[in-house]
Image 1 (cartoon, one colour):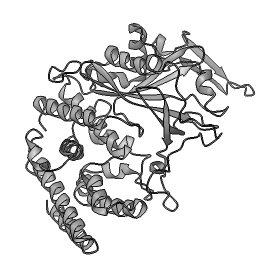
Image 2 (cartoon, rainbow, N blue to C red; image 1 turned 180 degrees about the vertical axis):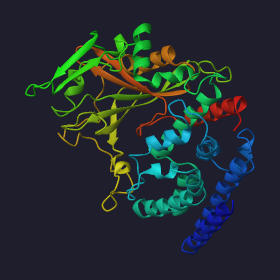
Image 3 (tube, rainbow, N blue to C red; image 1 turned 90 degrees about the vertical axis):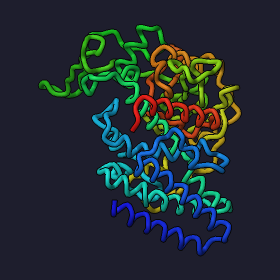
Image 4 (cartoon, rainbow, N blue to C red; image 1 turned 60 degrees about the horizontal axis):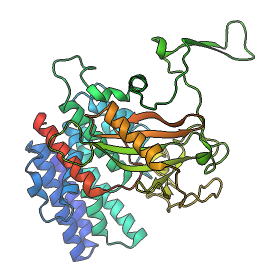
Length: 439
């Protein structure tokens, strides 16, 4: 606790110095937003206050629900720290795994270091995070000429960056899976629909229910030999998961012509990331549909890449299937690099950078039926109780629409979505989880 007090005082001193170089109006706004942030931390983390009824902490803010969700989500990382996770032994262990290749732009330090110990994570939330938000606000102000105090409020209380939104989704999944998990079971059991992140269970259930998952080669075993090695070397045997083995054996899919013509000739299989939200199993969430599509992004693979993890992220209009502007998150994945790494994303892209082909304005044929509906129906069939999911949909040559996998700690990939619906949805999900399992 002493460390937290010292950290808080140090941060408040830094804010005070910043206020001196800002306009009086901007300085007061920064001070008030900082006080709001720390009041929320004290409520959720020190006093053990509930999410329900905490609206009063954010009264007067235009985006009160968004701010409440964002700040509580940050606190959830500490509340869930030692709790079991559907993928790992604990939430902290899952964070350590998933933050290994992500760094705050320009630092070069993998964010997994923040999960090395709970003390480090607490220190970050109480001191380093607000300081990073102030630095980001100053940088944004210089780049965009927007008032620094406006940017600071957004960075600290209602962040828009892809990473913060990803973490909200991930913490929601971690909390919801814990709150709805079967009781008195072994650590690896009782996670119900969250088991669909296991690639084999996903394919097995999809095949059983007629969901269009990527095809599997129906052979019991494979023998793979190197063409020039001998003496028993260069030979490998793989037993198909269909036959009780550990390996999922599939052919390499390729993009159908309508997608391939948008990409370089040697581009990888390029997916559509469709985000969906489910109201199924919840009587307190009323909507005209059980599952809705939130957003879609076309991951246009780069020349020579093996997968579309190296791609340009083109937003797609869910109403029309029209490809919109593209961007990348690559500046967040520069481990060990400091110099030359931009703080923010690049300017919006309209063309594929490897070919110059104009992608913005193109429309995906039968987009609703072949992309969105595939994800929506899969959510209904495979994991109706999971509130939010990210689906990797491909339009494969010779196979048509296929689902490669589902991600439950999922990422919007900078796709556009309706923020009012999304944050209201997450707000109600947090209330639901707290009612079942207070933390």
